[in-house]
Length: 160
Image (cartoon, rainbow, N blue to C red):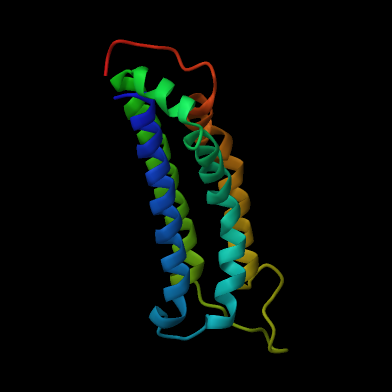
């Protein structure tokens, strides 16, 4: 596979991840039978999770538009081990984030205390915020393939 092909594959995974997570958030008020999440919360949650997927997509966009970068990447080949590693790291991260996002959206009950409010750290916004923090903590490991693919140190190899 070429560098350009791998860039497109990884960028497509990030774009698909963005779409899937947004759909999960938008459908939460409809799919929760207890109706503890309202449509008014959707925009806020979408804003919170944007920090996970916008940086990688922005990075790929910056390297996609210059024609010289695409041409250079189409001449360089990537070993199958690096292709597997890049796709595996990205996919594992995305599945983990999807599970962490699904938990507060679909499985956690939000039970108010005696005053009628939720205890500190128990609201949907606070739980999503913790999920985003954890995801961003893992991001240096997951963004390593993106850094390698968009950096000037991508060497030419003969294997695919």
